[in-house]
Length: 583
Image (cartoon, rainbow, N blue to C red; front, side, top):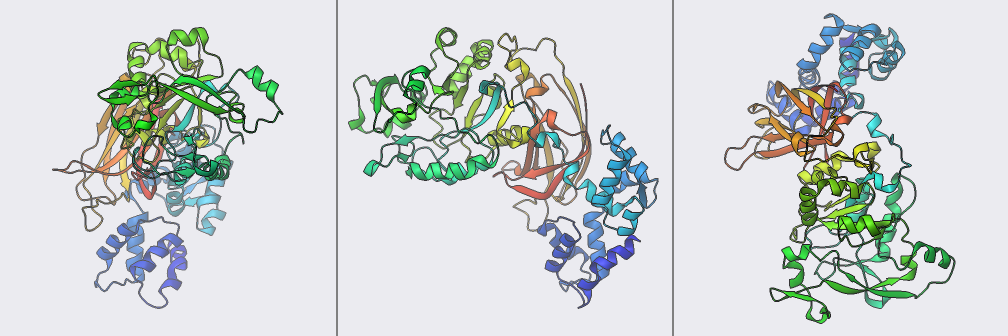
């Protein structure tokens, strides 16, 4: 039956005789077998017996089996089919319950899976599943590592804003370095597409009374403010509540704002003096910003250090119309935790540079958490990161900081963690913080073993790789593949493991290695899978990665999709694993 179905699907393609590698690739896609062209080309070459660049129908059948009929899937199928050619509904149901931990499965759901993935009509009508149907089901989104529920907005979205982690970017308009590089609307578009909910718009006076956006006191290029707003309008509401909160300096109280409602504020500007919160503290570590300062900008009250002006105070002008848009997120300079306890209002938020925040988290970690349980706190990169590099955001999520702002244009580990964390809750850009980071009486401290812990024992069997990206140094489809598994979370949970190296095989490496992790605070933990090509002199070569929250992992046999360094999908490249955890 399978043979008849297979021939009926491909016979017409061979009416003209043999086919080349391009037609082979397209025919595999027609059969719903996702393929990497580099791997197809290599397998084609191995099966082209006459080496003429064209293959027969029988040679195509061999290629199909090599790519689609993976041994590890055959072993699973045979276990539940009793080495027969088909799974009955009861066999499939048994697999779903025993291996995929789908305890609420019913015969009706097994029937629906068969109807969806079984390609052979006669088998489908008999309420059975062939191996062809099974491999298509195992390669489907239903068998991916990320829980289906986590791919939707499932959390309570009616908490106060300070109860959420919020996907946040730093200097969103920059697409290169912080000092000389270009500003580009693509910075806003790409950040919004990635689910970013907190954008930074540095607005300055431009020519002809047109406000512009750029990194002030630097040589970065400028964007018109109106084009930035137009881009945000176009891309901001792909998901969520169709509202924008403006975080800025504010003149006066909320009561005064209400009293001005409806009045004409055109041209009204207020001025006041403040400490420059984005330059203070952080600029002490770097001369970079000061070097680009113009002498004409010097003001009374500037502090001179190393012969360069380091501005501690400045006169700020705020348009009244803009000020009155600031309701829930008024920007206030952070002074101390004690000052905030005594004077900070519910609608006031702080921005703290990464260096100061790191010191505070080490010296006063518990106080920091009590602060973030009440007030929105934004962490931004230090001034010395002129190359737009990023810090590890995990250390600040551990203490409940809501807005951990990263340079979205810079790929690497920090952005992998950022993208992985915000896969949760439907990629909405908002994640409800764990209860112990919301409780204003919490005793949680990430640097200490938590009381009343409820750890997770996580076991992962890394079975195989599926059409992994080959090494850039290989002329074919080869790589010396190794997989690194790393847990990120509170310091005591951070651990790194790796597999042995499989030589010269990126197509179908098999490890069958098991790793066990005991995770003390799973609510904050992320797991990162990294595939590398082992290097001897220059170090390992990055091939692909995937990061997700530990508690968003499905149990059972699962596919781990892989993404490039720039965050692009590498489908069909994946890892095939078995996941089990208990709490």
